[in-house]
Length: 274
Image 1 (cartoon, one colour):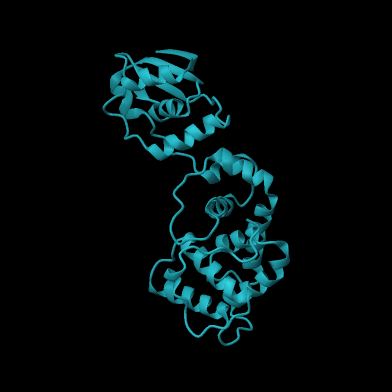
Image 2 (cartoon, one colour):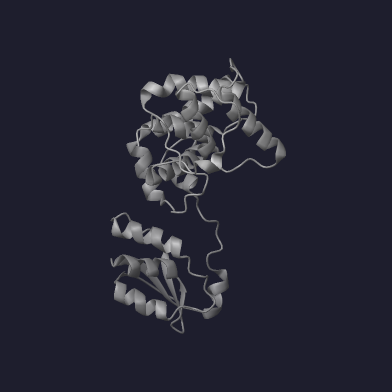
């Protein structure tokens, strides 16, 4: 085998891709877009991952990175390993992939699983400008997540705040609405709404001081009934529900029945900074 580091231009990447192995993985366009975005924004780093070329000239590994070079139009330095036996392709990419929480942990953040989930919800809301029950499909890179968390320490505070409330206030009981959703709402809100959110939280999670027709009661009952019927809905669905009833609560509305959530697929959180 031969190992060398070289600059791979979009033109060279195109030539290497033309020799792609038929046994390689299916190209994931969304992943290519994520890598290309990092390359175009100058966030790509040469971390030692290799482009692998067989002894017959076929590309065995690196199609997503090379495709990203072509898509971004920006050349990158890569470590290239050549003269690898064709049969070795079955042994490539056998390690476990790293998730966003792994990247945050390596960068020194705490509560990384909750932080990663909250970041995804927050970034999806900011990009769209509203809460929606549908998934936000655009992937976020680890670099983007780390930079966002560094620039927004309030996100870490929001995650820690509700983890603490869960342990102290709720006696570690199962949540009605996930702490990830509560942390997302707290981060998005202007500070003057924090006290109101705390009261809303206590009414939804603990059932405290709920008055007849209060939106907090309807949200609490909806989430409890849904949980009893099957698996908990996705975080996007819970955020959409919480945002809908929060808007009614903060405006001091009284409800007669559950809100038809399908009638308002896009909900802007009242008091949000974004």
